[in-house]
Image 1 (cartoon, rainbow, N blue to C red):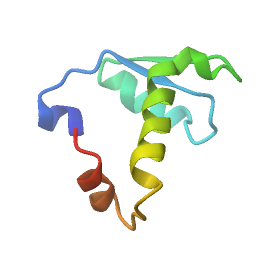
Image 2: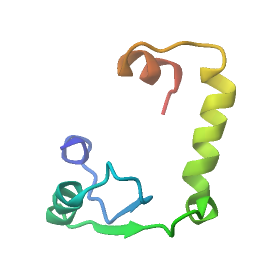
Image 3: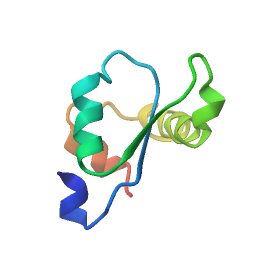
Image 4: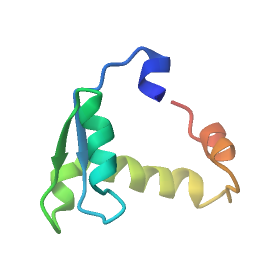
Length: 79
C-alpha cells in the first residue's frame, strides 16, 4: 500500500457517500488500522479541505491542461 511505501500510518479516512466507496474499500482501510468516517449526505462543508483543494486544482491547473494519465496529473500538481 502507498502509505507503507511512504512510512505513513493512516489514522482516518474521511470519505463521502459515493457508491464507489463500498464495503471492500472500508475493510482494506480498517485492516490498516484507519477509522473510516463518512461525511453526511449533501454536506460538502463537512469535508471542506478536500473540496477546497479539488476546486483549486480544477481552477488553477486543469482549466489549462488536459491530462491523459495519472502520471501527467501528478506532474502538474506537485505535492
